[in-house]
Amino acid sequence: MALELKQSLKLAQKLVMTPQLRQAIKLLQLGRLELTDALQAEIEQNPMLEEIPLPLELPGHPDALSAEEVSGISDEAPVTDRVKGDDPASVAEVNWEDYANSFDADFSFAHETPPADAPSQFDFISATPGLASYLQWQLTHLELTEQDTELAHFIIGNLDEHGFFDADISDVCRHCQCTEEEAEGVLRLVQSLDPPGIGARDIRESLLLQLDRLDYYGLLPYLIVDQYMSLLEARNYIQLARETGVSLKKVNEAVAIVQELTPYPGNEFSNAQTHYVVPDVYVYKIDGEFVIQLNAEGLPQLRLSEEYQQLLKQKSALTSESRGFLRENKRNAEWFIKSIEQRQRTIYKVMESLLKFQRDFFEQGPGAMKPLILRDVAEDIGMHESTVSRVTSNKYVHTPQGIYELKYFFSTAVATADGDTVAAEAIKTRIRQLVHNENPEKPLSDNKISELLAEENISVARRTVAKYRDQLKILPVKHRRQARNT
Image 1: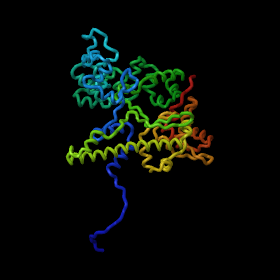
Image 2 (image 1 turned 60 degrees about the horizontal axis):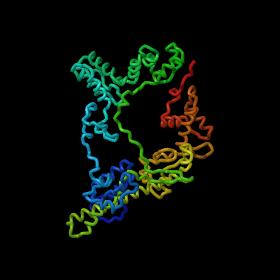
Image 3 (image 1 turned 90 degrees about the horizontal axis):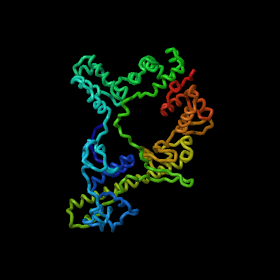
Image 4 (image 1 turned 30 degrees about the vertical axis):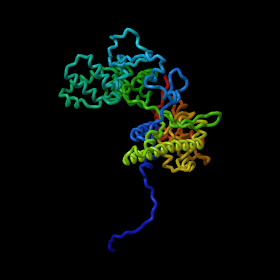
């Protein structure tokens, strides 16, 4: 068969992803914080976009100033003067000494007490001191040689986020050119610093350091952690009593002392910031009916710039290149605003559909969750499953039952003995309830939980119960057992 090149016509349909369509899809799957950053970035890049200013509210005035009042304020009468009073001299002068980066709290030129709302000098610190800074500060109060200081700084620099020493003594000797005895001595020095347990190499050593600091060295709590850590982790208190030769009551008292310790002493000095969940949509129950409200707080309201639109109308004011630039940015701005509005409408539709399918959940809680998949919601609102998946990712709703991710409402179906189906989340809720109400001395095994669920016409295998229990972060039965004092 000979190979040849030839031209041919072919009619086909295909979807072309334009930059605007890609942008709309990207906005759809962004979370709330990411969306806020995207809006601010677009405002900075596109001159045709601007943020609608919020109404101006003045202290002591219940109503905001009108546009005429704002425009009527001249340069000679600034807003601060109107707020403070008719006399411009009554406006307080800014004392820049209050904002000085001076940390000497015992010395001040001021003869009066600073106001309660005055800024603190510590407000200007850009970073929160962490564990390393706290330990190095303690070292400054010790009289150390140059070599010991170098060893201590190397050890502190090799502590992980839990405060554990994440290196070997050989590493210290090789880096600092010292003997093992010198490295061990400085390591014990670091372990004597605050917080107790710092510089340990594992949880066991951390607990021992803390017990030693509390004068429990050689006593039963120290003995249990030192020699019977595996029995302690398994909560086998009966065997602990046999091995130590004491009563079960004394073992429980010793374990209670150990449980008050901090396994990870460095966690309290973590610089990790807590990011709180801000709901994208609220669901309220008013007069027996559920009401859906989108959360627009904190999101900038966008509009097209009036100044640039007026400039476009003046044909002689711009060159052809500048006019084309503004027209292109105007089209992009209009598409961006429409994409944001479409995103909000889609979230509302999806939430409305979820409310219809999972109404029992909003009424009774997670135990009334019904099986639901993406296809059910997609067919209900007339959209593709991928669109529903993007909308429900990283989006949260505030309900009468608490704050949940929209993905939470989708749950697989588990068949019951009578032929019906129940949602997997409802089964997890029931497992949590059974474990919460169990006898601590005789906790429920996975097999027993499976049998109890079977009595409720829910057929779940033991392996499935174990999987759900792990997802709920519930310990196995041997770690939940508590022995009775005798």
